Amino acid sequence: MSASTPQSSEPAVLRPADDQAWDAEADVVVIGTGVAGDTTAIHCADLGSSVIMLEKSVAPGGTSAKSGGGMMVPNNSYQRALGDVETKEDFIAFLARVGRPLLYSATDPTFGLPQWEYDLIEAYFDHAGDALARLEELGALRVMHIAGWPSYSDVPEDRMPRGRYVVPQDDAEEMSNGRNAIERMMRTLDRLGVEVRLGFRVDGVYLNDAGEVVGVRGHDGTDSRSIRARKAVVFASGGFTHNTPYTREYMNGRIVGGCAAVTNTGDFLPIAKSLGLPLHQMDEAFWAPVVWEQALAHDPSLIANFNCAGDSMLVVNKYGHRIANEKVTYHDRTRSHFLWDPTLVEYPNFLQFVVMDKRCRDRYGYDGFIDLTAGNFIPRVGETSPYFLEGETLEELAERFTERLALHPDDAVGTRLADDFAATLRASIERFNVFARQGRDDDFHRGQTAIEQFFMGLDNQLRPADADPDGASDQLDPTLHPLSDEGPYYGIILAPGVLDTKGGPKVNATLQVLDGDGRPVPGLYGVGNCVASASGQAYWSAGCTWGPYLTFGYIAAQSIAAEPDKQIGTGRDSSRVLA
Image (cartoon, rainbow, N blue to C red; front, side, top):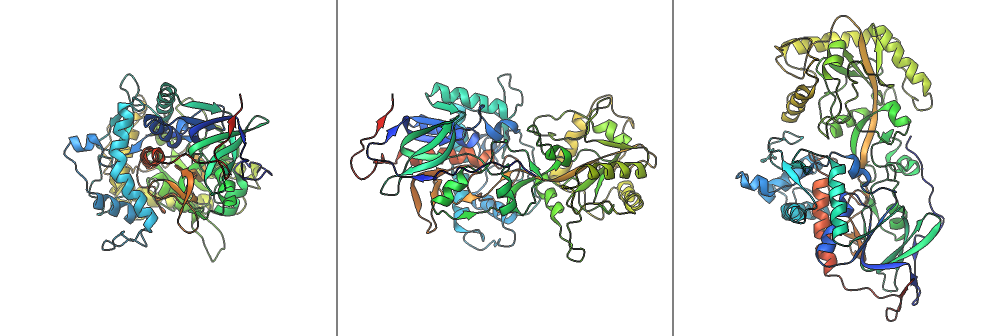
C-alpha cells in the first residue's frame, strides 16, 4: 500500500493576536512548487504582488518534475495559426461527454455538467491560450506544438481531435520534459524576486475575526514558523496519493501505488476539514497502471505504465482470460482492474498479467522517452529488470507469476492463479492469434482508435534499430501480431495505480475555495490536485493536468491582484515581522 504520513496534533486553524509576530510576510503565499504553484506565483509576481512560495520537499517541482510536462491548451496560438478555430461550446461539450457521460445532454445549457464544473471548464477555454502566451513572453515556458497528437477518446462531440497539445522544449529547441520546464519556471521565479523556501511543511492557516485567511503556519525542520499573507494564500500542494489512511478511507484500497511525488500526502485536507469545507471527487483519480512489485517497494522513481508497448502481447486476469483492450490509454485501462464479480465476490482483474513472446520482448524493449513511452516495463535486450519474468513455456511463466504472488501474501489477497491458468492462457492466446491474423480484434477492438494507432506508431519509431527480427511487417493492424507457438515467454504483473488523486474542496471560476454554501472563503485559493477536479470520471486527453493548471494559475493571479489587504484581528494591522 502507499506510504503513510502522520497527521499533526496541532490545530489546523488558528486565530492570530493583534500583535502576532510573523517570521515573514508577502502579498501572496503559495504552497507547492509544481506547475500549479509555479504558474500562480509567476503570474502574481508579474502583476506586481510580492510572493513567498513554501515547498515541503527539499527540491522543487513535486510531481510535475517527474512528468512529461505535456499540456492540453485549447484555443492556443499555434492551433489558430493553422486555421483550426474551436468554439467554446464544442470544447465544453466534448469534455462533458467524456467526463460525465451519464449526465451529458447536448441540449442542456451546461451539457449536463454540475454548474461549478461547467464554470471551471469555461474559464479554462477562455484563458488557456492567453495564459500560455504570457508564460512564453516571460520566458517561463518554451514549448513546441505537436499538431498531430490525437485526443484520447473518439467521440463525435470532439470536433477538434488534434491541435491542442504542446510539450516543453529545451534551449536546443528539442522536445523536453516536466523537469526541464520546472527548472525554467524556477529561474523565472528567481528573476521576478519570488522567495522560495524548501523543506517547509504547511500544517495550518490563520483566520482573522472576519473569517479571512491571513497567513499560514508550518515547520522547517523542528521549528514552527508563521508566514503572513496580506492578500491571499494559495494551496497548490498536490493530492493524497501517498497517505494510506486517506486512500483507504476515500478510495476503498483501490490504490496499490502511485507515481506522484512522495510528498503528496494530502496536507491541505486536514486544513480544509478544520475549516468545515465539504470535499468532492475524493474517490476519483488520474488513474494509471503501475508495475505491482515496484509499487510495493515504494520506489520514488515509479512511473506509470502509460503505454502497454508491443504487438505480440496480451493481458490476462488470474484465471488466464483476456479481459480488456491492452492499448486503451492508461486512465481508462486502469478501470478494467476494478471489475466486480458479485457471484464470486471478488475483483478477478485487480492484478493483471502481461504475457508476450520473445519477438515482442526483443522488438519493443527500449528506454522511456519523455512522456511518450515512459513507463515501458520491457528491458532492452541484454538488460534485466527485477520485475520482468521469463519462462521457457507458458507453464513455467505461470510458475514465475505464482512465485511472485507468494512473496507478497498480504498484498496479493484475493489473487491466486487458477489451477488451470496456463491452459486457459494458451486458449486465450490462440483466440488472440486468430484476431491478429485477420487484423481485427473482435473481442475488445484493439487498435481501432486514433490514439492507439498513434502510440503504436511511436512504439515502432522508437524501438531499437537492431531489434527487428521479422524485417518488414505485413500486419493488417500494427497493434496486433500473433504470439509465437514456442517460448520463451515473458511477463510482468500490473496493478491499479494513479498519477495523483483528484479530490478536495471545490473552487469557483476564479479558483477561490468554496464553503458548504458555495461562498468563497476570503483569501483562500486552490489550484491543482489538492482541490476537486472538474474532469469528472475522465482523463480528458494528454496534458489535461498541466494545461488547466497553468491556466488556473493565470486566472487566480488576476483575482488575487484585486484582493484588498486583510487586517489582523479586529483592529488595525499591527503585526510585526521578526528580524
